[in-house]
Image 1 (cartoon, rainbow, N blue to C red):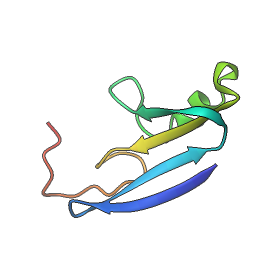
Image 2 (image 1 turned 135 degrees about the vertical axis):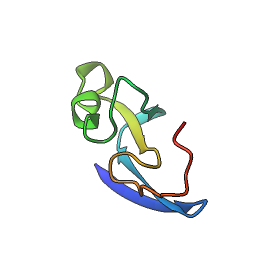
Image 3 (image 1 turned 180 degrees about the vertical axis):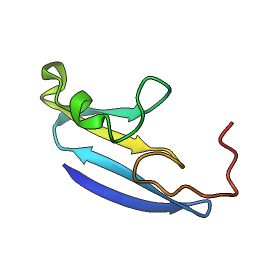
Length: 73
């Protein structure tokens, strides 16, 4: 797994990139998954073993910035 950071709209976002073959599966968390804190369990699912997985922490979650001037609604 590789972790990356990128600055977007004044906030630094973090995403994880798990290598694999074929089209990647992109995970953007919602209410059922709290962020990268839950991603290892998801990424290790046997059904996804061979797939490339990109897992994104949205602003305010996981290892991404938690800007005060961001609408979390």
